[in-house]
Length: 406
Picture 1 (cartoon, one colour):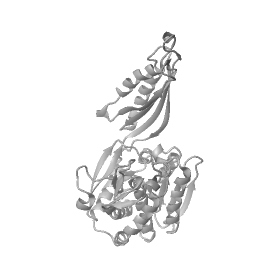
Picture 2 (cartoon, one colour):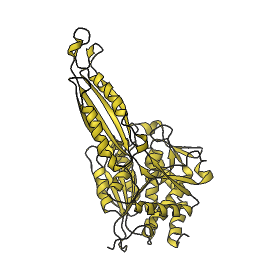
Picture 3 (tube, rainbow, N blue to C red):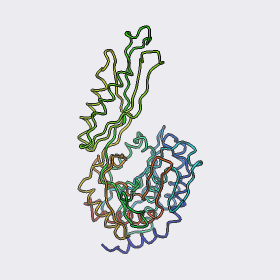
């Protein structure tokens, strides 16, 4: 479908903004924003609030006593028939400790942007901001636009989840700008213009289980003790045996600890469990099985308890989300980009929006990889094309999704 005059104006302006995008990206990457660093996360939010307010968006914040605030930046559009906002979503927190940007500041090497959080997902926030700036210049846009900028996604959004779900219930659709990928084994983006986004994600539940036994001298009174470590060890194998790769279910005990001294029968032990599942209907049965294993003694006299520390919901593709994907692919083709999709075991906030019934498309950010490691990178040449694609996809939402009159 050829670009309309309005789409041409928006995409042409974005094509001139690469240097400005890189300047904003550098500022964000060089700002500390580890999930537990509330001061840093809020400071990173101020950078985006200033940028968006200067371009006419109204800013609303949702405070949190422990984590960074959630930010809602809105570009109104009174003449639109459908007043439900189109939401561009992203998180500004990272997994890195305080001081990481000082040790590894933003840099560009061989066409790749480097630095903590450069792909996951500060580059996604940059294109969201520039898409909003481009649409703010254009009267002919499909309706109200909201940027939802969250603060604790890397922790499973303990404070942001209620905000995300409330916004999604009132939204027309959500584009989540987590990083996209190049297809496995393909050349870099500049060579073949291929982009892989996400059509589905697993849900994840992060749990801690604690075992209580009874201390005893391991030499003089071994028989009086109840080893919590032995009980835990027997349970680890049973928990891992719940994994069913064909059904998309994995159970991993990733951390363990316990004991008092080497010459004491262990009075306590603990472990942490990562559960991943593909479909919403799998969650309750597998959780019940995990809880039964934890709470059933493997050593007489031991007791166990299970606590859910955090979780994500699966992203399951709806018919409306498939229509969004069609609009996104159509937009990408205007800029010579070939879009494919993948299912991933990685979790994201997009699962929360899809679970409340909001059409959601995920991983529409610029192309990157190596997240959560010092090798994280962003393909610089993908910034402008991904921003152009997202902007035109937003402008074509009306053709893809049913409208509701104001």
